[in-house]
Each structure stands twice: as C-alpha cells, then as structure tokens.
Amino acid sequence: MSEGYYGRPIVKPPTWTDLIPTYFFAGGLAGAAATLAFAERTARNDRLARAMIFGAAAGCAVSAFCLIADLKKPERFMNMLRVVKPTSPMSVGVYIFSAFSGSVFIAAGSEITGVARSAGRFFEAIAGLIGPVMSVYTAVLVGDTVMPAWHLPRKTLPGLFAATSATSAGAWGLLFASARDNGSARRLALVGGTAMVAVLQALHHEIGPAQAQAYSKGEAGALARSARLLNVSGIVCAALGKDSNAISRIAGALLLAGGLTERFAVYRAGCASAKDPKYVLEAQKSN
Amino acid sequence: MSRACPEPVEGFIDLTSAAAESATYGAEERDRMGFFTDTTLCIGCKACEVACKEWNQLPSDGYEFTGESYDNTKELSGNTWRHVAFVEQMEPERDTGRWLMESDVCKHCTHAGCLDVCPTGAIIRTEFGTVVIQDDICNGCGYCVVACPFGVIGEKQEDHTMGKCTLCYDRLKVGEQPACAKACPTESIQYGVVDELRERAEKRLEKVQQKFDGAQLYLNDPNDGVGGGGSLFLLLDKPQVYGLPPNPIVPTKDLPQRWRTAGIAAAALFGAVVLCAVSRR
View (cartoon, each protein chain N blue to C red):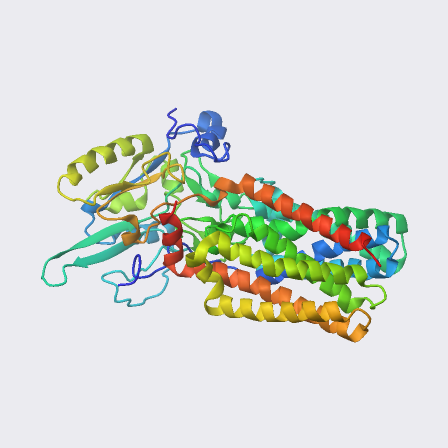
C-alpha cells in the first residue's frame, strides 16, 4: 500500500487558480518597477522613469484583477477590509497592495495627463519606497501555509521572490525603453536574473534533496527547467544587447517570460508537495 | 471559568490561543468544549457522518466506490465534517488481522492556523473555545485551506465559501451536544469539557495500552505544535496510518521570523535597484 492513508494527501492543496501565480508575477514586477521609477526620477532619467511607472501601473491593474477574480465570492472582496489582522499575511498584504497600487495609479495618472505633477511625484516616491515590500510579502504569504515546498524554504523564498521581481522589472525596462535610456533596467535585469539562478540553488540546498523533488519533478520541474532556459538566454541577450534596441527587447521578452514561468514553477511545486503525502511525512519526521 | 489550555508555548504569537481568544468574551466565556474520539470503540457505522450531514444540512460530495475498505467518503471536505477512516491491517501469510476505524473531525486547535490567517475575520473563536467559519462573511479566498495542518477545510461547492465542523455551535448554544456525539452508538465520540476529556483520555489510554502496543493519544499535549487540540483522539497505531500528520505545527508559529527575513530581502531589493540606478555610465 502507498504511504499514509491510501496515499491520500494529509494537507489540502490550494483551492486557488492560476490567477494567483500570475498575481505573484504581476505584483512582484510592479513593486520593483515602482522602485526603479523612483530611483530613475531622482537620477533625472525621466524616460526610463516614465516607462517604469507605467509598468508598475500595468502590474497593479493585472494584480487587482487576479486577486479579486480568484476569490470564490468576488462580490465579497471588501470583507478583506473589515479587519486588520497582523497574524494573516493576506490581511497585511491587502493593505500593502492598497497603499501601493493607490500610489502607483496616482503617479501614473499624473504622468500620463500632466495634471498635479508634484502630487504625482510624491506618490511615485511613496510607491517606490513600498515597492520592495510589495514584491516580497507574497513569499511570507505562501510561506505561512502548510505546503512543505513553500513552508520549508524559510530563508531563501523571500530572496527568490525579490530576485524574480527585480528581473521582471528590469525586463520591462528593456522591453519598453530604448537602449539609450535603459542602462539601469539592464543592470537590474542582469543582477536579478543572476541572483535568481543562485537563490534557486540555495533553496534546493536549504530544504534538502527529498523536499527539493517537489521543485525538480513533474510539472513544477518542467516549468523550472523552461524558466532557467528562458532566464539564462535572457541574461545573455541583455548582456550582449547594450547598443541594440532589438536585442534589448528580445532580452526583455525572454526575461519576462522566464519570470512568469518561474512563478508558476514555484506555485506548482507547492501544490505537488501537498498532493503527495510523502513530503509532509518527511518534513515532520525531522522535526 | 476554566482555562482549558496553559500559558502559550514559546514561539507562538501570544494573543492567538484558545484561552486568550475565548477570554475576550468576558462574562459570556464558557468552558472550552471538545471531542474525545476513542477509536478503540468505533464500529465504523458512520452514524456520525450521517447525523452531521442531517443536522448541518450538508449535501453529498458524490457517490464513488473507492475500493478503500469501507471508506467511500475519502476525506473531510467543505461539506463533509466527519469522516470515518477504515484501515485493514492483515497478516500477509495468515487469515488474521485487525480493522482500525477512526472518525475524523476538525481538531479545533488551541493555535488554529485557519483562524490566524483568515483575512476577513470570517473564522472566529467562539465562547466555547471552538473554531467556527461564519459563512456570511467568508469571501472564499481559500487561505484557511492551505493553513490547516490536518487538511480539514474545503470549499463548499454550492455556495463557494469554505466549510468545516462547527462543533455544532448552534446546538451548544442551547445546551445540546453535537449531532455526531449524540448519534454515536458506542460512545466512541465523547463530547465534553476539554480539560475533563484530557483526563478521561489519559485513563483510557492506561487501560488500552495493556492490550495494544501502539496505542497512543493524539493532540492531548498542550505543548505540541498546535498547542493541543479541542478534539483529542485515542489511536491504535501511528497517526499517519489514519491519514493524520504525525507532528502537526501551526504554520503561523514562525511568522515573525518570516517577516524579518522578508524585510531583509526587501531591503536588499531596494539597495539593488538604487545601486543599479546610480552606477550609470
């Protein structure tokens, strides 16, 4: 007989849909993009700042849709706002996302219309400061579950989310700003992409070979391998395409696809670690 | 008023224990109530499953023949709040063996992961120290589903909120016992004050241990990973044999450390972006 009780899961996999990993991607991109927009504005590179604040706004719009549409009762979304619960990363996250996306939409609205410039810049700065928290809190959200693949990488999962967010934001800049203006985005994509590959190694090491199977086998493993291929080719293009708009855009597209694929790989790994009881049993043996 | 659980164990978030939460009811606080499920008395009749469905008006999860002994219920879900597990342990070369039966239910944990993570406040600790989902508040985010170390909670397909055992909150309110305990013909399911159930379970274990080697209590220890359960079990084999986690831990236990690590990662991300921006040309 299979492990446990007829091989049935001990914990339940998420009831969430693919909108949730999509949200992790879009929200992560938005966070790091807003920070880059703020930094570029301060460095007086308005063209890249403009591309980045629009990227943040696009990310926020996608995020808001995903978050609400994934609820089984979307019409009750506002119930999230009737309490503040420090013990719930989702409750904390709703307020982080509300403050962040509100700031981003004001900044992007001002940027596109030219209305209330100084208010726009003020909220762009606020969004830039909240941005990194927006990018990383989702690692706490999934870490605070009983899915072994998410719960066990205590040290490395936030780093992976930060690195993936940096890569995606840099990739957005490569895709939507010209080669003349996108130097910072290129550096961010290179730093983030390299960090992503390194942190993934560290994650496998942190949780050990038995638990790492959730990340390396099945659908999660296939997605992870595709993501690595996309990211490594994206990094190469980004490094080589310094003076070429076309190669920069290809690098941006590859890294955006790589980031999205990596989010799905992590998401599927969490589901896989719930569906097969061996992960829960292995994790609780060592405790 | 009795405090059914001791001071919070180190590492837990202090304000989120059954005692601290039910104390917020002030004068309306009641003794902490729970179940002691003595699996040695279970005959697998599933009267608990039926009584639960009837009283709580829960629809069927469908009719499927699993071939897994007499268990066609499979697992606890949004609409199935009692689940009788059947484990056939046969000696390979002989015609002897034993048949384990266990009626599973929500554990009403002292430190309840579902309650901690619920972002709407739909999940509450009642004045009886039990954990209840208010289905008129739940917006179906599903966070509780992945925060339960026992896989108890599921989606109620017909109204899209999350569902689990309420320990018959409505019956408790009027001094009745939960439907499953009332229906159980062998007193395998016993309802009562958790403190008293713990004592009763210890005594029963002493007796059963004389006959069965693997007999053990499950979730009776207030120092375990969930601070002990409001539902206790006497098992005849290891918890995982019944599909229960051997060493459950509430996921929120190390939440402060998680936020600290995330803070470092966020600071690193901010630093990286700024460095990339200033190291131009």
